[in-house]
Image (cartoon, rainbow, N blue to C red; front, side, top):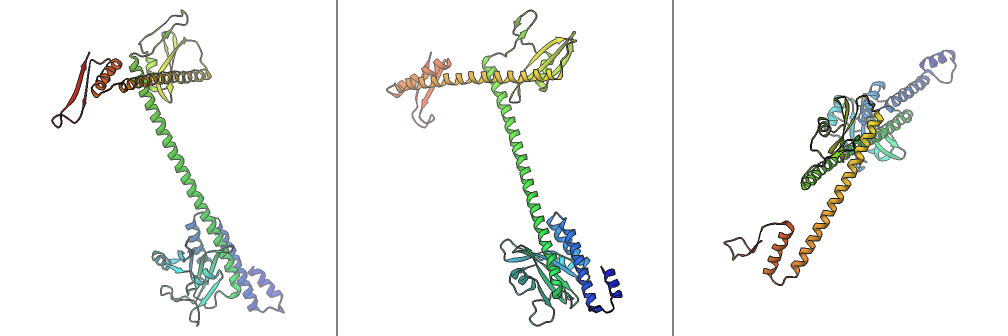
Length: 395
């Protein structure tokens, strides 16, 4: 741009603009170019703190007349403008002090935040809003530009220069344009961080849900295993069946072959060759808990395709589902029978006419239901404290 202006000056000696005016135009054009470049560089930032820090550093580096740059953001309550980014050692000290200014206070930043328009204060002038800062004694001019999003002011860009003629009225629109770009970059960064935080929270929630689901599945497996152990214990024997499909012979057997044992222990399909035969054992599962296994014996040369193994596994799953339903049905029948017995005993107890008769009937009922040989029932406090009332029945 400056090359173009110099060439134009040489070719236009009688130009209505003198060289001073052209220099001012060139300065403003350079200022606009720098502003556009700074705005472009900060627009690609994602992290809010990265946007703030890079903004103040870029402005201080690219604008030769500016020696100190600060950014304030208005708090959620809308009462204070808090310093969030500042250049140099002075900036570090101010940030450590958590420097802030009240909105509407008699300060350049406070008034820019309140009015939503640029405020420029020159040192030493009567009525100037500039307040000398002992940490920044070289400041000759201070200019504050509101960070605006539409009609809303979210903060202030504070610029300070050692040159008394800095921040002329004609330059204010350019700096305000930069402030508007900064406001958009800050807003985008804040939205990005909110989205990132929500994503992290959602991921943490999913993780917690998966962990809870895993715990529930483990608990279901444990409860299922205990239920089947108790079911087999009550039956007094394990369920087993060996079938010879060639002879049709079927008989019970307590023998557990190595392949059955491996399938039970490892919870996976086991294949093995033995005595000219191919043996396949498949675990039987209920809610992920292994409750048994079934074994197939094939000709050594018989081929089992992967889809056949999937079919066998599916049959095993369906088998487990079926026997679990049968166990639950038997359990519900047993509970119903016990409820009926409890109701029957309760009815018999209610027909008695005195305490002694009730005790005797209770003892008899327990003997009938449980087959016990001795029942002892005592009412009252422990012995040696009050007279003991007891009745013992033997059969």
